[in-house]
Structures are given as structure tokens and as C-alpha cells.
Length: 69
Image 1 (cartoon, rainbow, N blue to C red):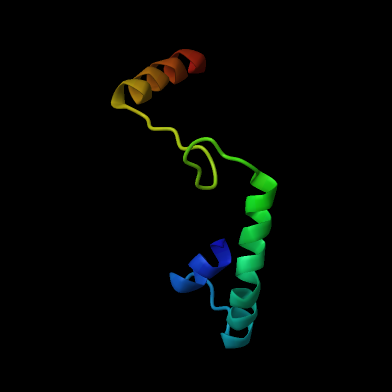
Image 2 (image 1 turned 30 degrees about the vertical axis):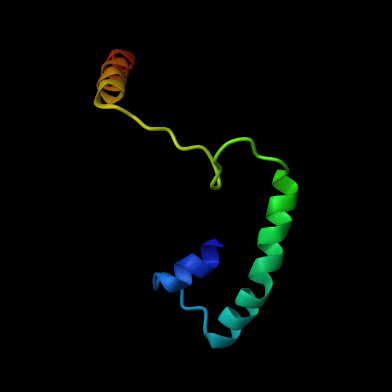
């Protein structure tokens, strides 16, 4: 869960009681998320990741320049 990750990274000071409660419900939340997702036929970790090449970025720069005129 993102809240646990934020606390681990020091981005959120949850306090001991809140962390204990969150760690107690985290497995249930993860299980519910997996049930909702259903059968996944490929690797999945929370969403789609697009890999961009330098060619893609250069193409966008040109398109943005042309749109700005």
C-alpha cells in the first residue's frame, strides 16, 4: 500500500498506533484489490508503464513547437 511505502520512506509520520492499525488491515486490502482485478493475463503492478525513447521525446518537442505557432 502507498501509505505504508510513504511511512517507510519517511514521507509520512503516521505514528505507531496508526502504523500498527494500517499493517493490520493491509493484507485484507491487498486481497480485496486482487479480487477486484480478477484474472490478469500479463504482468501487472498497479498500472501501465510506457517506455519512451529519445526519438519519441524529440518528436513531441517538434509537435509542441508547431502547436505553439
